[in-house]
Length: 346
Image 1 (cartoon, one colour):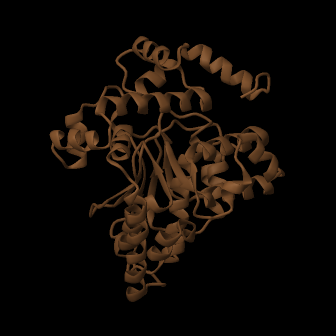
Image 2 (cartoon, one colour):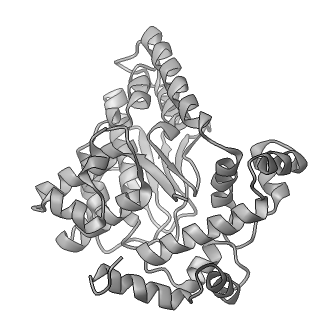
């Protein structure tokens, strides 16, 4: 199971930044184990792990921990594909941002959640879901998302004063000064959530490129493309997506997942049975796949991984891992580290 995916355009953008920092794209792709053939189509879906590996590799080789801010400074709302084009033709900023949120699945997805637009007369919030715990492997993702949104607001409205403040979950990093160069808005760290707080009535700001007729045409195209993605989406996959938002700190129940999916639990059991799947089997498989990804690609402690996967104790996680892989998490991580250094064959 993938922890999520993005379009190949995201990889291309990071490679471009790497090139400007003096790194060779071919070498970067080789280091993260991604074939150039996977990038031939801009809308090709790429495992999210490769994006995080690539960003981390660039950061380690250049020392540019502000990589996410660098990328956001050189992007455009059109990077969101059809969703971005539809947003550009909306009547006002509120409709544009709702379009980007509604069709986020066209350009990225993650088992941890989805972005949201929270409308409030006192100031709307454009919210990015939590991907905690934070480290050098994923901080740049939050920076990139929030500051790409900030740049998109300017692309959409030709105004740069619509954001009151920027709120970030992780503590102020050592590159904190880079944020002052990226925005005039106040940036708050160690916050309960990641979001842009917009100024009062910002959502009613008209768009210079508004074209109601074309906007409707593009919305229909977005719906069509999203339906194509969803058509291949089984109940198994839907359960996996919901599980990602519910695992932290506790094991989710089928009743809770069914409620999120808007169907009775007995109906969900039947639909999964029709696909020769079971709820507990999906929970176990999801935990296993995500655990392997965390151990291979992050430096999270076993306690942190245990919490993120909803185990009651680190010991319970270690016993489950031993059952899955016939080895301990520590031995597995050491084996992967040796493979990454070329000491062992794949």
